Image (cartoon, rainbow, N blue to C red; front, top):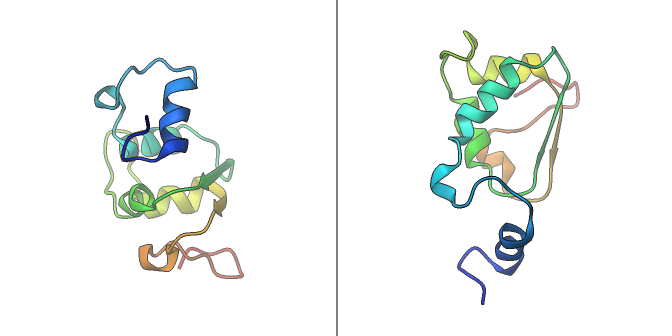
Length: 104
């Protein structure tokens, strides 16, 4: 039996080794992004997005916090060397990178 998230996601969640037993214990995605990026070296991160872009959009719009004095856009510009996107409607979420590698 699969749930509303789809058969692939359901099987992945059931069979993949994990510490979390349910989604209510998962960290806030933007907090996790900000914590991870703030601790990374400049230009050392590759983000691979294979699903919806809501969390990346929220990261872009995030303000400085206890993890970093940088905005989300500044964190991405400083820490991320590559963004890999699989399909989707990414222009709607302002995640375009121009040919010169600058975040637009």
